[in-house]
Length: 404
Image 1 (spheres, rainbow, N blue to C red):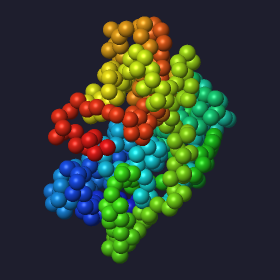
Image 2 (image 1 turned 90 degrees about the vertical axis):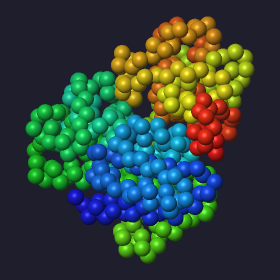
Image 3 (image 1 turned 180 degrees about the horizontal axis):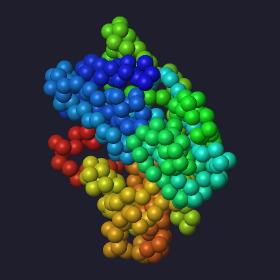
């Protein structure tokens, strides 16, 4: 392991029990912190200490809820629902969050490249058609990047013969080297090291551009200046530097732009859909006033927390890949069976990075809906334009939504 991994893990632990205690949010009933760790990344996977919740709550003079998750699908969802005040996570979670209601406050400042590798006889990505590819878990950063590299070459995951999801990128190199898979993705540093000891085992098909490495810290854009300043002071304090927290650098003005490449490769849904009309928030309002039905395909929990007035809950149960060639038979959208086919239908979810409304729109066409609209910007666009929302939760439970 590289030296900075353990130092950064220690830094994040200290940040959670130290920087967060510097927050002063008397107007907030609770402080929510999400730590999203990528099992395929040694840096984030080493973030295991989140401190005492009792200590945090006492120091903040409010209830502190710190959640750690390895479910990156859930972390990506949370980056768009704005249900946390602070998010600490890897590059693709960061890319999603800063596209909407969060701003980048601190980062490791380091970057690394990733490489898609294959057996020597596979000369190009195009030759992967029908082949077996090993990837870390579906929503990990390396998998997002691999998906982007494959798409850039004109292939899709459906054109592959088999995709195996594991827990680490190192296992992918091992699988390719010993003939258990045809291709895999790993950091360029790990690939180069592996090729030194296994010179005839694999070769590089394509490399990514440099992408941000390790973990990043984001805060809500509407956090108070005082609270933001307290976090910044802690990051740059002598105590923070002495503890190794100095490796988590205050983000510079241009650092957020470094995440755009990650988003463009593996996160966003297509920007068009045949026979479906993509609409803006303003168009949704106009269409609804004329009788169109708004269908919210997010989870019941998300709908209950916050939804467009008049929208109908129609959760899309998604198990298929987040890809244009997804297998719809793996999903469940039977909830739409009883919906009227004649009324214009508008489908939405959690924005361009969320695939549920994209898939629901395609399903609706197949089910005979006569006119289908896709609100691709979804709840993030609606929220950012400060349009009215409703909640199905009691007022006491819905404080987080109410302050938005």
